[in-house]
Length: 126
Image 1 (tube, one colour):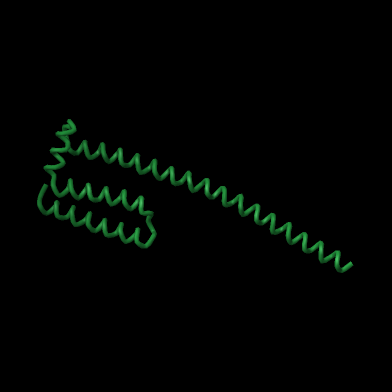
Image 2 (cartoon, one colour):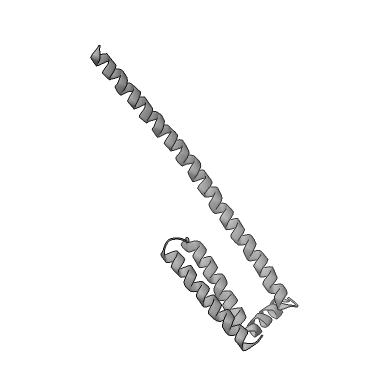
């Protein structure tokens, strides 16, 4: 891997990190997901900047080709991200269901209160 490509990878990941930090600071990205994506960007920068480290890591794990190691970890990471997002969706689905039920109850109570006041006014006028 050429020095130029390594520099591009490191600078690119630094830009990605800044972007992630800005989104977290502006509350447009949850800090948990920001932390996860920051970790991914740092790992990419480290392995992209020092390809020999990638080769040694692959050899240490008994993986023949470093690209296979990256693909395997990428797949594992994608499954982890999808699972965590599905847990978040499930949690929010339950929250939406509960909020919808609470709104329905409040509307019914409000309607009942209005009906009660209307009946009291009718009784007073008679």
